[in-house]
Image 1 (cartoon, rainbow, N blue to C red):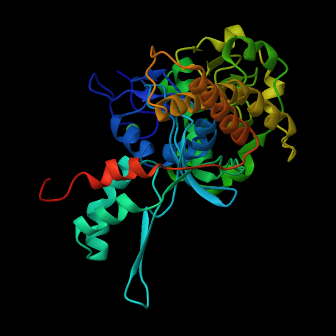
Image 2 (cartoon, rainbow, N blue to C red):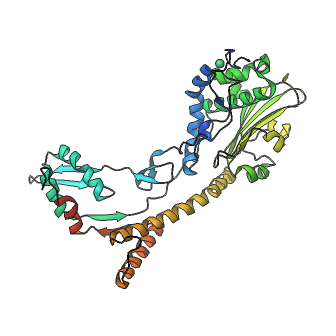
Image 3 (tube, protein in one colour):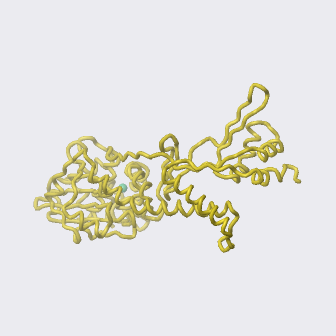
Length: 400
Ligand SMILES: [Zn+2]
């Protein structure tokens, strides 16, 4: 078997599969023929993490699973207007707030303020409140059962998300992906040769002159982007490596159809006139191909002349287009949640008969809550005294 292209270690049947495109980015193509397990581990814990981290925001916003089906990552402590929220990868969010605060008042009384999503959540908080305040549980329950509580529902403020790309380690990981893919075309012995030394060195040690002289960011769209998006979605990932007649080898990594990383893998002396490309749809990771160079012909000269334009207008449009169906789905889900909550409040099951007066009450509340939601206004409703009594008054620590 061949040797590892980076450390010349032997590859055998125990070699760990290397993802050519990161699993975190939805990559499914793996190989055991190019990189040894030890290099694989080292990159996985280092430069690959840096590239995966740059994909986290777009993965979260567009709810993109990994190649192996792990959910999109959660973004923690994101500012949403005046709130701070955790954005879950499935499109829901949690308000980050202190669950309760306890203060002793000068007149000897104490004040406890509780923020919770439901009465059940308050129930679960009781042991912590007892521990923090030193007030006996029975006393806390009796206070709670007589307390006035309101349910407040409101949309969080606007979330501003900044996408950041580049950085030495992420670029090294992208260069590695290009070298690994190229090795699948020209064999490992060539990629271990002297013409690729600077590129290999950049991946393994991050030597700076390669970054300055032989890598570039690229914001152009390939001429055939429309063709690619038809098959692989609006924000495809594409790794394209191609050589010209002189054996100059260019690697080009299109990151979510937003930005390209370009690498001169060899100035000259590589196998001439070869191409290999891996394309995948991160919105649907089962859709990918390593035959993309046969499907989509990107000329060598295009790959060899990157341009960087600070203005990301087109890229922003693509993200919002990809987000539109998710946004519509989220609105439908929120509407369904409101309808369920109102019916629950009225104690109505799915097939229960509904009297006219209850129907009017339900409709008017659904309309009021949906309108408040659409206008980003809070919807407030007092929690009934009997509900508070039923939840907190009926039990005490030593039973009834
Ligand atoms: Zn190795």
